[in-house]
Amino acid sequence: MASLKDEIAAKLAAVAAPDGRPLTATGKLSDIVATDGKVFLSITVDAAQVKTWEHVRRSAESAVRAIPGVQSVMIALTAERAGGGAAASAPPPRPAAARPGAPAPGQPQRPGGPAGIPGVAAIIAVASGKGGVGKSTVAINLALALRDLGLKVGVLDADIYGPSLPKLLAIKERPQTAGGTRLKPIMRHGMPVMSIGFLVEEETPMIWRGPMVMSALTQMLREVDWGELDVMVVDMPPGTGDAQLTMAQQVPLKGAVIVSTPQDLALIDARRGIAMFRRVNVPVLGIVENMSTFICPHCGTRSDIFGHGGARHEAERLGVPFLGEVPLAIEIREKSDAGAPVVASDPDGPHAESFRAIAARVREGLMAASRPAPKIVIEA
Ligand SMILES: Nc1ncnc2c1ncn2[C@@H]1O[C@H](COP(=O)(O)OP(=O)(O)OP(=O)(O)O)[C@@H](O)[C@H]1O
Ligand SMILES: [Mg+2]
Picture 1 (cartoon, rainbow, N blue to C red):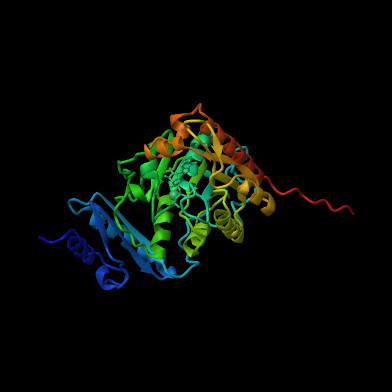
Picture 2: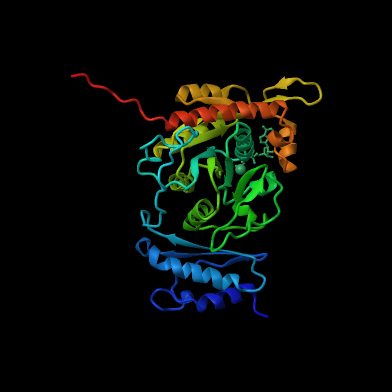
């Protein structure tokens, strides 16, 4: 019996490239990744030819989707050269300037930046230079806290290499399609959420090539029915390498929240993160000190395992706002592991309170970022 990959290759061979050749003979296809009914591959073309290839991509997706046993297909069209014409056209500016991230009337999202997502007033990244400092934990709880402040919030897990959202929210189901290639996000705690992890199994080794990462991210941003959102919170992968830089450039970010633990090593990475966002003209909304102080669940004693106050000090030094502290608390880890983030599962507890205070500062920062610069009047 032919393997699923062979079946896919056979279907793709029946799809014609713009020059009439079978798609499989063009040399533009990546390896086929097929696990548990989910199929991924990319077609890499010259940036100038992206438009002529879009219908090929669609035909290839429909052909593969028709194979029995295939549950979801993502075929990404990627351009090797930067600056191609693939970006979606910019949405009209939203009139609701009172929304925290909405551009002030007449102000573009970000001059020279990527086009915004229609219906989404502000996108913020939760990032750090270092792995494991609690970005994902902060991202989901910050999103829930912003929701508690009355905002319409969505969450995008942009950690293509190690998605966290399926675990943090205990999501096992797969997103449904909303007609054509569009996907409906999964709803949790009143928020639309999306992660590449909904489409692939946790154990799947994913060797994503650079352009494919970009394309998967672009699809999750632009081909998902996010609806009307005040804020989309994006959980970024760790690091400040080229991949992160490109991502920061691809996503029309209104601001970035940097997560750090208090010790020097993490702060060095946080500094790199801040420098990265500054390079691409994304305002840094501030730093969160995570795992700030350990409060013993038995005796209530405070111990500053990683030190304390380092991030506040660093924020002052770098001239960025300090957004608040989150203690190192067993409850936070346990709730995260159980798929019930602490802001949702213990909304009246002290940790939810800390996250809401952080969320309020983030909202303030977004409002400030949206205000037009004061006019300078030169007197005659
Ligand atoms: N304040 C906290 N108190 C206790 N545990 C925490 C806290 N913040 C995060 N954790 C735990 O630390 C681990 C790493 O957190 P998380 O996955 O959020 O980090 P990350 O920065 O997103 O990691 P990665 O770089 O791998 O994406 C998780 O087990 C999480 O539950
Ligand atoms: Mg993470």
